Length: 142
Image (cartoon, rainbow, N blue to C red; front, side, top):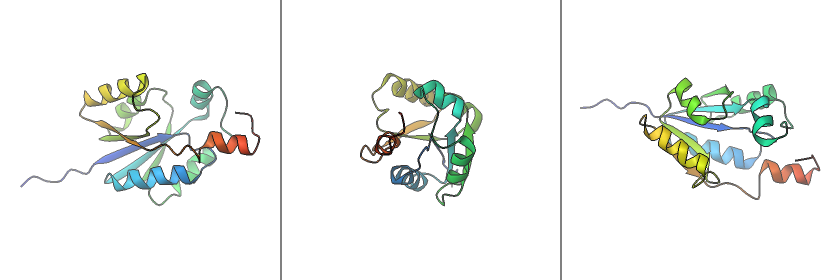
């Protein structure tokens, strides 16, 4: 009889202006693996990728995510390329919003992870409850 190897999941994100869409992704991710690691993207990477800093500073975002009951471990994510996260953490499945599905970055990530026996699982992106929408609602420049 083979021994069950725990499935390690990884859910990277900015988690700025934490909202119910973030919570839903983390709850779904936790239900789909045995151990959930959440990567909180560092401020410098957010600035490079999105062209603006997050509203909530990194240390506070990390503390918020660590307090979520679905999260087994929260770590800094200093990587733009999420395959570099796999190199550091060796997870089995990476959870992303489905806004990545079919994109060049998404296809590359899927191929890179498949090459090491890992995969990407997409969850529906919560358009009506996003940090971008919240930023506009409270008039924070986006």
